[in-house]
Image (cartoon, rainbow, N blue to C red; front, side, top):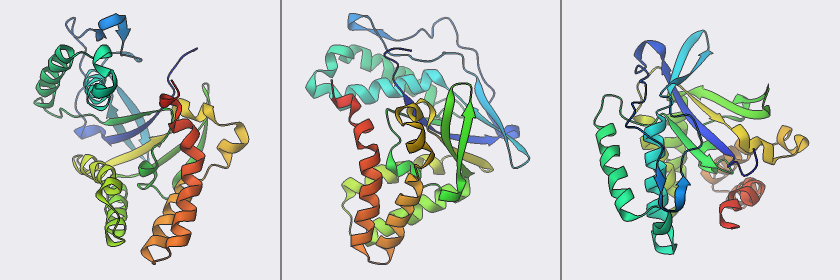
Length: 255
């Protein structure tokens, strides 16, 4: 679709027996339209779920689209308020969104099971996975990359990476985003599975580059080198990963 924003997602799937029941969106839950007629939704508002079978068990990831849209709207408002963001998301719209979001958070299991990133996969997401967990997946929409692991392993890896970065004296500017990921993962019940899906972002790569993309290996190698005090290797491997994704991550800034 012309003009479509390509996105990747990090999802948490919980065991089917403990998953919250999907809800139908009521008539009052309309797409958010703000000044100038900008629509802020790019997916169905049906409150359904992704369902997968993994290691002989069924897992469910509630989509919670309304909640995620409100989170995204407020994130945009806060990030760009000083450079014209108020023209797209005025203060009164942000206030209404915050009030509704607080009400959703107050509900049982009132949280997002999905993190969405436009145009790229954040490098911190790869911290939760081992290179061996990488899968090349071919579907009707094309070829993409997927990683899956248990919630316990993902959480342990993120905590370990934080210990390594802090032990190396890295500034909080570097560790804060990873710490937010740690806190997000820790809020889910076990048993659960974590999935990184390149989604439509995979289409930004040519076929060969996608098949040979090993970002998780680069990130893991950088952390292992840092843990052993080898700053030169750590910077080299991290730079390889950062250069791979930099052109895609810069897309939102190109306009």
